[in-house]
Image 1 (tube, rainbow, N blue to C red):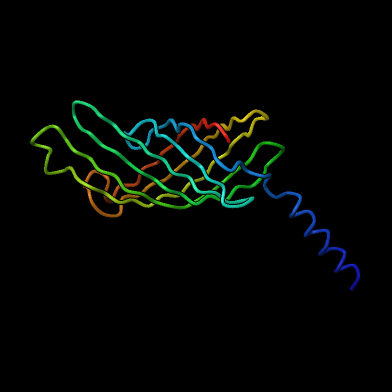
Image 2 (cartoon, rainbow, N blue to C red):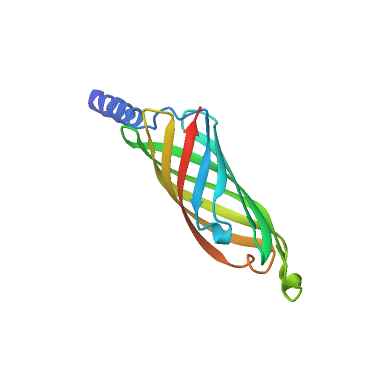
Length: 163
């Protein structure tokens, strides 16, 4: 009985000591990647607790061929790997809009809604800088045909200032 209690206490202590470090209350920066043609995104993270946070990303494109925006929101869980090195995963979704300049493609533009997952790694420097690399699979749920029923693999590098 005492061995079981001792083993349980040791397991709980090991689990707590391997948990994520304190994450920053706020982080603001850029998420640079594919983003299904939307390019760079402005990214904001807000801590909800010691191991949870929200992330919001806004990407837009203004070109000769089309104007578009995409807003994504994710709930993330953060876990420590080693020292300032963390890994995280999350789930969320968002919405966007595409407006083509070409009148022939005008029938294809419009609003879309998508679901997203997220998994990544990050390094939290001793200065207020956070660098991350993440993989965000997205699937169109409804709306614009170019995004609907399409599975997109969005890989990006994030650079954020923490405050």
